[in-house]
Length: 330
Ligand code: PBG
Image (cartoon, rainbow, N blue to C red; front, side, top):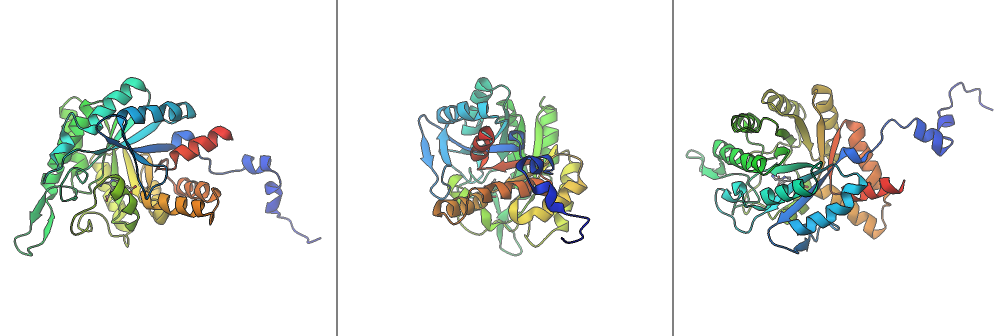
């Protein structure tokens, strides 16, 4: 026998002792379920690149939540797919739009559910960018007009708060968004509405399937003049600091799996809850591999555990349904 003092394997011998010393535990409360809502009734449009995910009308979403809430679902994040789009994304602040309508009905049926809503204009503009476009006179380049976009987000956030949304989540990466949204909410009697800021949102290739789900791919160009460069780590902390100074209640890192270092940095640098967005591409990649039999379901669990272990308090994930079902079986 080797003369070993330390045998770390001792604590790994049985399932019970492994459970006793597990440092990270996934709970139903950690998860936020993203939902794509459309107008109409009985609408269920599956997203081809995201097996198990659909665009739904509110009646169908309510039926779905009847099964998820009893499994412990605490929160949803709403995205709206409007019937019509225009250059400035005015559908984003339509009080009769899919998100305000869904929020009101969800709060009626599930008063305890924390209803969050993504605040962005890319689903509502006909060009697919996250705000109105402007052409720079010197360079001739077309880009998103920062301050006009923020004005739109403010109107959108107010419409959502009025409909009963608990948490507004600005995702457009325009400078000054959180401060502008906070003061407008406060001035309009919505001091109780929280802000979850997409603080460190990277210009990522992992958003591909979402653009089908949200019908929001830019018609030309890309989002690199407003979303962050995947090469940058320090800059994420700068974005987080600015959002905290402006009143963010929760800060977010997005995507999650290729950005675990950022999640860890942000956790260490902030004293508010940190959310991580396990984005569409991360979901589709794993789903596809599991469907093909190339990976087992455990790879999904392991990835979500990694996001939490890196420092995320909250995980926005299309796997939420699978997680809740697995936790209920355990
Ligand atoms: C809207 C928005 C996007 C995502 C969340 N909000 C798309 C984008 O920025 O292009 C991506 C979510 C995902 O991929 O799951 N700005």
